[in-house]
Length: 300
Image (cartoon, rainbow, N blue to C red; front, side):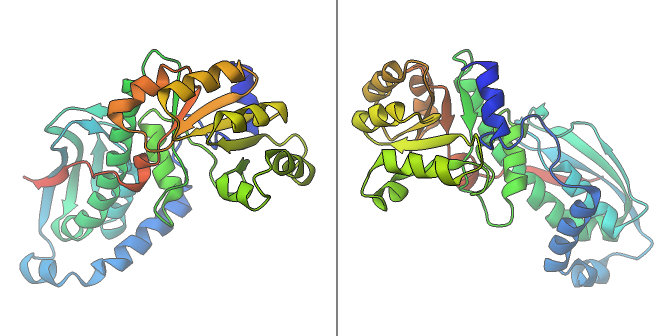
């Protein structure tokens, strides 16, 4: 896939954003973190209030107990700052950094009550997002040298999509469309609603969508791939195909469209799939079932 083709697709929503830019403004970040702190009722932390003197100060470190890629530190820092305006925080490994086991990621110094009350909210953000970034990086490493891009999907936690897709970028992946308004993706259920007629679906999409809109079509069979090429689809999603069918589909497309493999992609299989010659591999597991990265707040 040429840089020009990627640029064209990015302009029409297939890549929501490239590069590592935190997706929220300072105001939005404050609101997200404030809601999380309120959910945990941190202003009424009865355990901390009962055991820790109000003027007690403390120092602590955010430590990665396992190797991985870090994401979500702006949210963690905001959590501590909202409960202690005078807290001092030093980040030694920014989002997107690869860290080894037992690496200190951030140092904090401030009122003990604020640090303790914010601890769980801060960790929840960083552990979850770092888990996504770390798993994404493993997929990216697995296809290194093939020229294939690892993409996410819309299989995200409700309300956390922009953060989870940001974490994918922190791990070296790219974002597929952000939402239903970002691009046309005609899937099997859309085709079922038009009696399986790819020509009708694509023609209607081009007639109704914005001028120049790029169209992706999900194909389960090589016959569907052939029709999608003939009707001028820009991206062809090869869903749950065998390695043999993937190779045949890539040869059939012959550069006339971008090819995307999807469906049950595992770390064990992703390299073999990449070697079929597809351009993209989209992996729902990056966001919908990822384990948290083990990080902890250790007090001195």
